[in-house]
Amino acid sequence: MASFISKALLKEKAEMFHVKLDETALDRFETYAKLLVEWNEKINLTAITDPEGIVIKHFTDSLTIFSGVDIPEGAKVIDVGTGAGFPGLAMLIARPDLNMTLMDSTNKRLIVINDILEKTGLQADVVHSRAEEAGKKPEYREQYDFSTARAVTNLRDLAEYCMPFVKVGGSFVPMKAAKADEEIAEAKKAIKILGGEIADKKTFELFDAGERTIINVKKISSTPAKYPRPSAKMAKNPLK
Image (cartoon, rainbow, N blue to C red; front, side, top):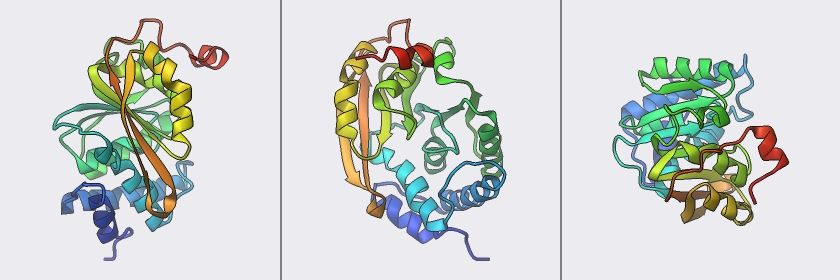
């Protein structure tokens, strides 16, 4: 039976970002792609449903995080606002050793995530919560080696959502598209207030899908207790 996605294309593109996918991972990505398209007919998850688009703009894009930051074996990672599982679920398929938490504020997306986890035989902690609420809870606050998010909001606000989850010594690793330098300039003060500093950034072209930037924000001190604030307060009085 023919595959829905080109596993050869996915394997080749992932290797360009130093990610090696074995047959088990490729089979799991195939299952993921099929389920994504099936569920997308019932729930609006993504505008990208063609096989090559899924391989490049979802799967490969998610895996580029591994070329931007070194994530050790068994690291505790949280994907904030995971949506249809990008980048966190794709990261887990490539690296099942990771201790992954997938968080989203919309429960119907997490129903999809749980279905994909079950059918790929993978395990993750699936959390239905708004980031600004979970970030105040002791079971999540400063409990992770890495937090990440892809295409959620501007970097300044994203830092306030994501940095409270990271342990001192860990990293917040946002994945950004074009104009990342503008966002970095706007977010620098907020990142400092939240206990971080920008350690590195890597900008590259994702084939014909455009520019991407992976930013490594190191957590150098604890985030003050008043952050994250409710989203309405963040909108009214952004950190700057």
